[in-house]
Image 1 (tube, rainbow, N blue to C red):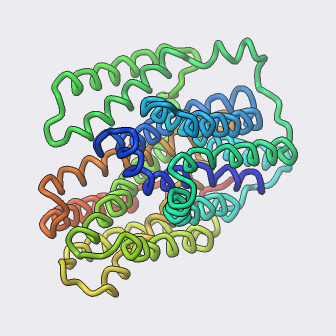
Image 2: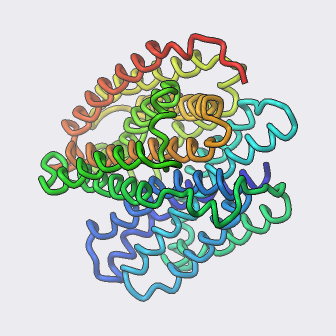
Image 3: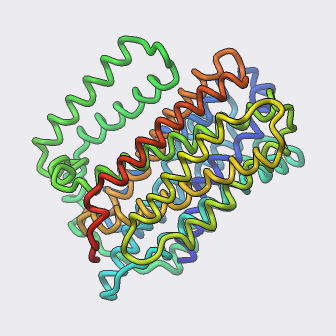
Length: 442
């Protein structure tokens, strides 16, 4: 578990450590804030595309190989970013970071399943919860770590830190992870990767990101391109012998599909709070950046605690329902906030969102682990993260739409009503899921 937990650190720390470096990067390289936003968006895009690809590779070549390759990609991205001569090289570095950090999670899930099958024991929810806890705790470390690096060394240190991190994860994995045998020969495995399906999936996710960034009026050509990619993806995958996304398996496994929908809905709101509440706290409520970070610390603390202790046993409807009710309660609480709201209320509303963040993440993760076929668990875990990141992409678009005239009380109210409606949908997706009512056996 040591190397797997170390690998779980890479993605969240890179998601948040960049925040304090965006302004210095824009000043030094002469690009605007809109351009630096791509350093955030391109990592989400690469992770959303790369995680199911990494899961597919883990299923075919063995998860240990994919895990080690991911660590080396992160180290390489660190070198590229630290020495980048232009802004375009920084964007390339962030894309490489997204691919490298995205390999760790699906490879870890596939490895846990492989090890559990080898030992003839079920994987307990708390083992999966440990990976989520480490990830959620690391989210709180990223911003202060980035601030220290930028103030003491410079913004290039935010990229350079990936060199020791990537090498350490690779070394731990090489020394401690059990060897895994590929299911097919290397040459045969490359033929099974379904490159057309992978390319169409990547194109669909990239166009989806462009749609969310252009809300409420995305360009017609982007909408048509997205629709064309989706239609072609369905046609190609239904005809492929070894599809990148097994649509027939998903059609016969509604538990997986509903779990992905719950993850998308949950993190649309959670990331909406992260991206939407922070600028409002600074611009409308008048808090400093550090104080605004401390207000949101309650969400991370509750999420980390809930992810580790809140999911036990085999029945998952309880944790999922508590998380859904918490999301609805937090969303309703957002409607009560205004520029003069006391700090205690701000902390309370933020902390409530830790319940869906922690419980929803782990419970749905356990469900995907149990419901996915043994030979496709890596790909299923990758799609799980894709659902999470597409929720984040949608959240950025909704926040931009709400704050088109700046972070104001009226914009926060709009985010609150969107979150309330989304919370109600999450409760429906949880209560109406018949699979959660049954006693799911390993």
